[in-house]
Length: 114
Image 1 (cartoon, rainbow, N blue to C red):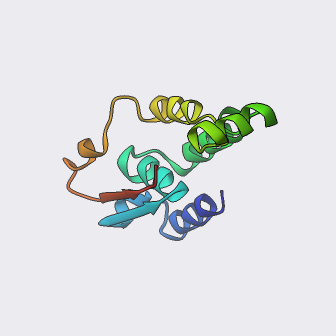
Image 2: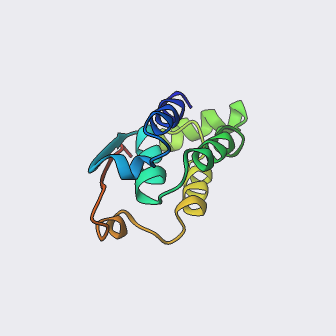
Image 3: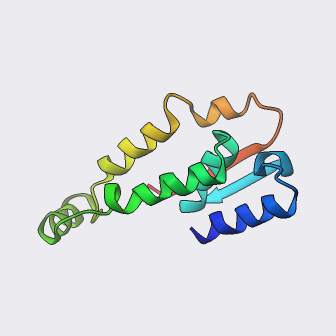
């Protein structure tokens, strides 16, 4: 949420210009990649991004200790990644990172580790 607060402040300093209008190239790693995809790739407003981010704890990080421990042993992931992927698909729809390359600016670069 801190990153979104900073981006929101930057937009206000720039008289309401959207982040995708301010930069030619945006990069995000880990949770920053999700923000980058939403703000630059999907052209969502910071307000929309904040609303989506508020969904993450209840939708992604709800896990019993038993299920989490079992998941950690079997798949090296404490949380159920399927919940995370479902939420990402709801956010992105059918749009892929390749689809963002058709826009002139900004170019989007995301990094994550699976």
